[in-house]
Length: 354
Image (cartoon, rainbow, N blue to C red; front, top):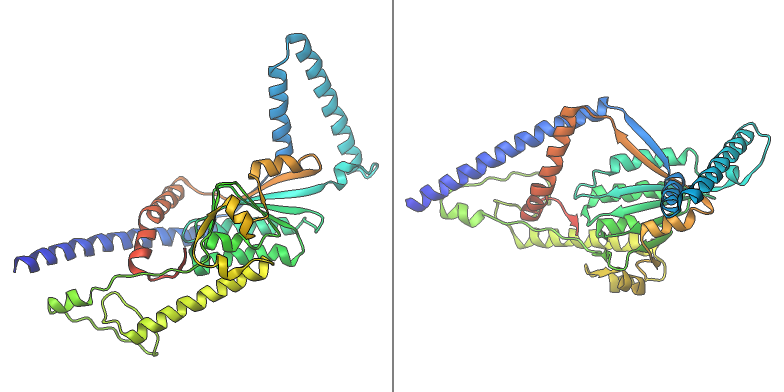
């Protein structure tokens, strides 16, 4: 009886925790949907060439003596005046210059979580880029993600495919990690660069869950699961799992894995897909040998290298939020970081590209 009492107390605590958590998630979800319907976002575009030039000027002035500084400052002032005059002539159509015809590199950033929630911003940024970009321009995606849900990262990769369909070159830069669903996004790029110790690969699918059926039987607790459709449920938390259901579940994982392999293989020509689609991860230098990336370079190094011949524009879409909305979104992020991944691994109720 003491065991039953302890178990009942534990189950009551767990049920209370889950109920409170679900209530918080429901409130956050409700506010989130309301925000998505009502709040408008703001598109921010920053010319990184100007930032880099300002940084360079500050450093150059810092190492000069007073007399040299005056000469340097005068030269910089004269240069800015000339540039403003040229811009005005270009705007009026009186002058054709390199300024008007320079290549543009649009820099987008994606920091992924298990739900790939940043896709909401990415879709707006890509829509904005498509209004002006041509196939003479380029999109640089700074990507950081260890993967997550299949459907979420499938959508994120499909957003990048919108650029490919318009023949706009895509360069993907990985400074830390692009694994599993993150690599699914990366392989959409025409050219992939990575830092030497960035983590790439993990081309595999995983799902796992516990089963409490024997515990329920031991305590004479019945659990009813009613379905319509032979495979509406295969493996469950509380029902009695069967070999047939287990076999079907594994087949579904294999099917997802095959689709993942096919997606990568179509976009990375020349790779040995069977060699790299084992679920393993590799650091950048090894990933280069296997054909997962095309060069070893950080995003900062790449951006600086293209500034001489191109206008580099950092494009970000930011939702306007009230203080209360920011609080709830921060709470949602905390829950995502502390609970969602644990819950996905515990229950396996969504397949993940990890």
